Image (cartoon, rainbow, N blue to C red; front, side, top):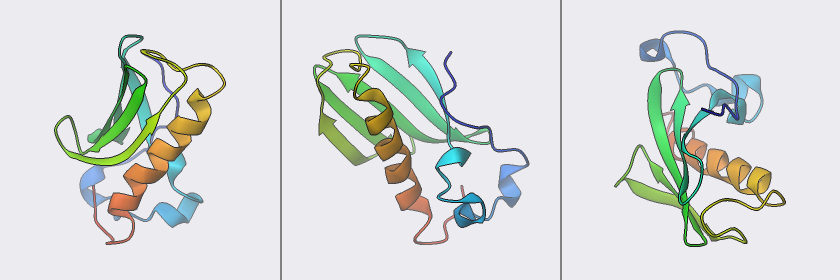
Length: 111
């Protein structure tokens, strides 16, 4: 498992979606790699609650909320086929986290 973000401490039932309290809120999203390649994929969490699913397969990166089969909130063609090229991973992971937050933040939605 690879952790690409910071853990969000506390009970999520009381989490008020206050992402702006600590900057953009991207740091609240913790990624857990569930497959390293072909496809490279991650589950995204805030605290213990899953808020997204990220997958790169056949050169297409998609982000769904809150899980597999959910709404696609970000997609992009990539250099890597089943695994990110090192030059692009940070960029797409950042965009993925921002896209996940965009689902929750505007509506004041809690996770």
